[in-house]
Length: 406
Image 1 (cartoon, one colour):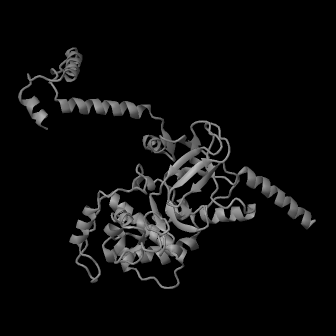
Image 2: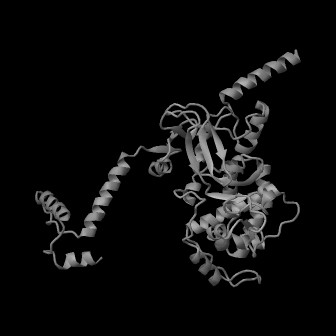
Image 3: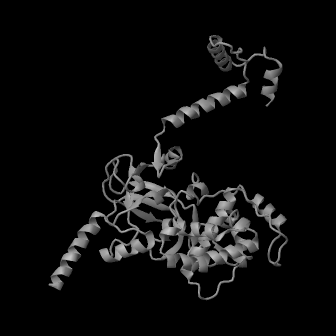
């Protein structure tokens, strides 16, 4: 700003060589144009801004364009997601967005390592699983730290609690403290509701919408002034367990389409989940509509991964991992998932993979028969699998049925 004032007040003042050169070139070009006033010297800041704008224009022109249903996708952002991994995104007319290998991959070679954007601990194990790192809470002297307000989440240590404070204390804690669920709610459904609340919290955090509600109507609600101060205090908290290059706007690119689900399912989740949380959100000052909650809920259902121990501790939570969500399904996949004791997922090559070959994982248990696999895929992911394995096994089953019938 000071350089701009100086340049406008004293045009004859010395300007750095690179800026002077640009000004001279501009004046020469304008000299031959009719009725064009001579170019005025520009400041250092203006010259840098012009150079940066020109560089960005050239970069955007050089990027390939991927269209999906007439919508131009941000390929620059997609490339940033996978720039350190042997993966790239393409658009297929029949499959939509999908991931392919960008080089030849050897068996067991790591393809992608990622953390979730949204996650929650499994309700069946919430009392001994850390809400932040999803590790088993330590026993003995170090007892798990419980949130004193909502009493719904636990942490393995004070460090994890402070890391999660931006989302929990700043946003979701009020919702969890206010809800009163009856015994008819199954634990898997409660886990899904908590993941939905985390999605709304992430949306509000990313948009910078600090809650400014009316004076509390319940004694255990903190007032708006204290809540806003708490949110600002934890605003710069590091998010080690969350994707550093992925934001809520990227999460909204994932498929949702509630209208594709059977009507009875949509009506059921509206009544049991969306209607209840919408009324609760008004109570705490969020004011989320049923439709917006339904959109988020169905997006979570279609894109979440179960977080298991590869050992024998069972499911520890569920999470939405944005970057691997574009990997398509196959009952005979070429990549598999390794899980550690935290929320991290590692995708590796199950077999040698050639460059430009599509990467696939299995959304269901590959040990199930073709009838069971297709049933689960239709119910949960709304498509009939026609991979080579399903087609082959379905033909065998049909032949057996004909033999029995004859």
